[in-house]
Each structure stands twice: as structure tokens, then as C-alpha cells.
Amino acid sequence: MSSLASPKPWYRERWPWLLAIMPTLAVIGGFTTAWFAVTSNDGLVVDDYYKQGKAINQTKERDRNAQTLGLTARLIPLGSTLRVSLAGSIASPTGSLNLKLMHPTRPGDDHDIALVWNGSGYTGTLPKLSSAHYRVQITPEFGNWRLTGEYRPGSEVTLSPMP
Image (cartoon, rainbow, N blue to C red):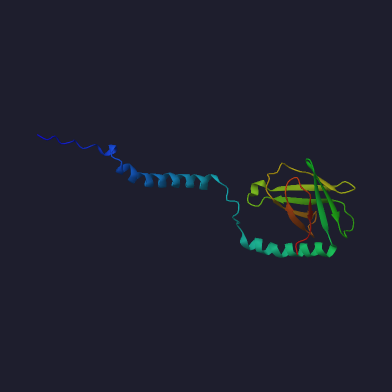
């Protein structure tokens, strides 16, 4: 008499597991993607495109005003203090300046710094920054001109009006 081997249960075979692994990985990947979508900040989305477009014309006018005045600024970091020297034909450098440090991708890492006149230049407190290249913008208290540039934390930079 010959003996027949009893068949193995399905979970002891390798083919069902090999066929199930790809759909299982797709479900895990879908949950991971959904988790990233819910927990991350999509700060690059702008609500009011029309308002942003109108602001471009005002920005160009401020750049032209800075070019007419021949303005440039030098940012010099001194530890946690930032010193700014302004050059050009400006009437009297008093009052305050607004300095914006804008992170290229994360709006949560943007910083607004008030620069006050101390008799020989403008100074302000420099916050703790990441190692990214920041876009920098300096405007006066009343905003009739603008200087821009790129700033890498810890280095000196010269700002000029956009052409």
C-alpha cells in the first residue's frame, strides 16, 4: 500500500504569503502617507492670490525708490546681536528698520526683527536660526524703500535693491 502525504495547511505554504506581501505594503504606505499629510504643515499654499499679485507692484516701487537713493546695507552678526550699517543718500538715519528673515520652505521659521538706531548704526537681537539660506528684507518704519538679499547664519552679507 502506498501512503499519501497529507497536504499542508495554507498558512504553511509560501505562495499565499508572497502574494499578500505587496498589498500589505501598499496599505502600510497609504497609512504612512496619510499620517504625513495630516501632521505636516503645508505653508506654501496662499489663500488670496489676487491680493498677492497686487502687492508685487508696490514691492517694485519700493525697489525703485531704494535704487534712486543708492541704498545698500551690510549685515554683521555679532553673537546674538545683529548690526546693520546703511549706506546711500538717506536724509537722516534715525528711527527703526524692519528686518525680515524668511526661511525658503518653512514659514514657521520666519523671523521679524526690529532694528533701532544707536548713533552709529542699527542693532537688533538675532534669534536662533537653522542652517538654511534665509531670504532677507529690510524696510524702513514707513516702508517707502526695500533692500533684499540672502543670508546664511553667522556670515556677513550686503543687501541691495532688486533690479
